[in-house]
Structure formats: C-alpha cells, structure tokens
Image (tube, rainbow, N blue to C red; front, side, top):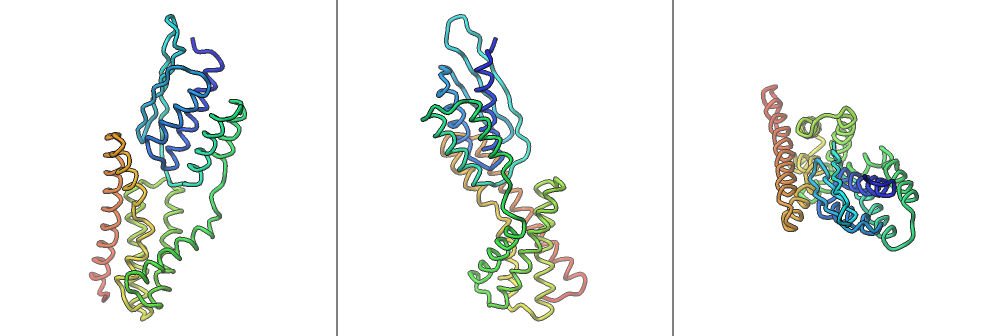
Length: 260
C-alpha cells in the first residue's frame, strides 16, 4: 500500500506536471520536473511517461517486498502561459534544493494555478500592437498600421469569447481569421487601408501556431516522437483553420460583389 507521504508527493508531482502541460510546456520538461520532485522526496524508483493528453507515473519504494504503484492523470485542454511555466520551473528548483515541505509546495502550486492572467484590455492592446507592427514589417503603410490595429484587436477579442465557450481549436481559428479578414476588407473598401495583403497578414499573425511548431521540433529532437507528432498535427490543424478562414472570407466578399 502507498503511504500518506508518498500520496502527497504523488499529488504534488502530478499537479506540477499538469499545470506545465496545460500551460504549453515541452514534454521532456514536464517529465524532468516530475522526476526531480519525486527524487527530492527520496522515492528511489520513478518512471514518468507524458503525452499532451495524459501523464503516467510509476513509483516504487525500492525494497524487495514493495509494490509498484502506477497513476494516470488525464490532461484536458491547453493554452500558452509562459509565466506559469517559468514559475513552476522556479518552484521545482527551490523544492529540490531547499527544505521546502510538501504542504508548502502544494500551497505554492495552488497559488500558481489560481493566478490570474494579464487584464483583458492589456491583452487586447498587446494583440493589436503585434498585428499592426507585423503589417508594417510586410511593407504596409501607416494607414495599414491602424487597419491592422483594429482588425487584430477585434479578432483577438472574438478568440477570447470563443475560448470561454470552449470552442474547438479549428472553429476558433477559422472564425477569428475570417473576422479579421472581413474587417480588413471593410476598412480597405472604405479607403482607409492601402495594402490589403499587409493588413490581413498582420491581423492573423497572432493566431499562428509558433509555440506548437517549436514544441513539436524540440520534443522530436528529444526523442518524444508521440508528442512531437501530436504537436506537429496540432500546428497543421491551426494553419489549415487560418488559411480556410481567410480564404472563405475572401470568397464570400467576392460573391457579395466586394472588390479588393
């Protein structure tokens, strides 16, 4: 039977791994964090296997008559929160190098899990600025800058709304990029913008799966082929949703008699 101390270690390690996975961390980082936490609590045998949708953890006291205990943690939903990943990394280092207790560790993880993201208005402003400056990078004018600013802000606000409604990955990307394209077309038709391509490209840049692609490559290089393929397929799905949203919006605009 697993004792109470080992149960707390298990909860602590799995909670840390779950938070990292849901925040978009690489698989090898999740497995390494769980292993370090368990080893720091003097559990001699630890085996971790993580995928984007689950964590499998086996523990053993190491004696001849001890039983091995295996636990599974289902991971549902994920996002990108680099601040949480950084805080959990810092916590794992502190836990393994100091005399921090398990209960104190659980309290810290609870605080990290309950930490609120940046205010919505600040995130919208950030998304709008990213979109507008990308429009300038792709040879847009200052008029295109303001068009991309509006399109990026509106499409990101829509993505937050859809995310709260738990809309799936493809539909969310499709609708947000279609909305950004319609806004860009409307502003261009009103004579506000100069370079339509720059405005559209800039406004959809915030939805590109950069983290998914990076994690797919890093996990593959680390030998985590299952995770690498999963993240790669996720990136492809997002890319297809973006292209579909823009393409359908352009086609509907043409059918309605709009010019671009």
